[in-house]
Image (cartoon, rainbow, N blue to C red; front, side, top):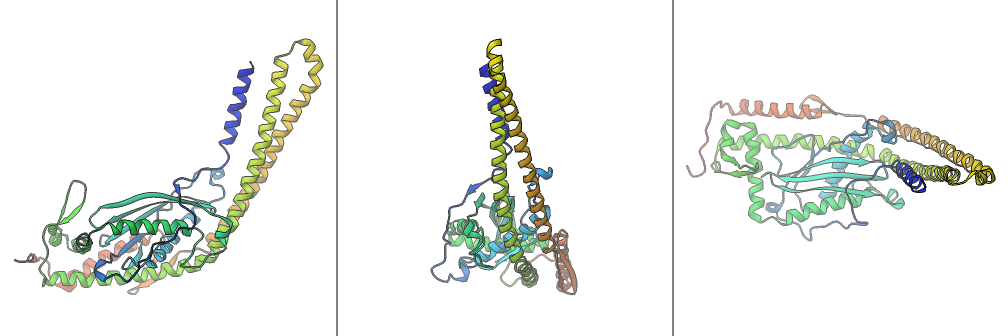
Length: 406
């Protein structure tokens, strides 16, 4: 009987502990990570351009209680904020060429960085990041996590130092490490394949034959266009226009980032304060509930293990233990109600944040593009327009360029 009651108590305590907040996935990054910096300016031939896709915001739990006051609108804002700040972090290292944020997959990128927000509550964040080059060679795929310290909410500056700067520096350092493993011939190959993949996207019937794809999906060059191939010159001209559009898009992402900086920084600070209070209330409630369960189980054990005379003598004590245990559980429930009030306050902070993070509208070639859910479709449309522009400017409907040396 005693063993059964002890097991019951253990089971109930474990059940209560399971409700005390979610675990942050991924590996925690070290504190005060120093970014790798190029000791001298690298030659242009050694620089790779990087495209960072807008992050996948991930999914929040359907249960409002498990969301803990978070909202999809905040995640959407973070999905745009994180790649822009990573861009600034990478640019300062001196190891890269142009670093751009793109709305979706970019076939012409030399290095493509993709990411997903796995967890984010203002105090802690976790993101999965993968980097892949134009050959379709995966450099790495990792989940990074950081839980902030109080001082990290203070010493921040746009473009330079974010609350989660250790996380950004760690990602940037991993990219530098993998870039450093490349032989100069590999860098040249990555750049060449990126150009040919862009050309194959514009004119697949012509330039797809210059590339081979193996069973792992990796690209390699079968042969090169002639140095004086007029169609490739036009492709390069179109690619320059595409990069100009992406630069224009980045200008709007950067404006969005700057406008978002202050309300987002404040939201994360206030959110951290709320999470701290929330955690304290949950601990207090758990403590009260555990004490209450222990008192009730103890009272039941006392009654079950005693004879009739003992039960008579200890009846008052048993009643007190039962009443005290019930009160402790009731008190814990009341504390949980206070937790619910704090969750509502966090939700209000989230609502005020999303009202300041409205989507962007931009003008490109006289066309208005809305950079929200439909931005990816707008960018795809732009790529379609590029193909039409290429066909119109080239005036060639069927053309097979000579290979190098033919």
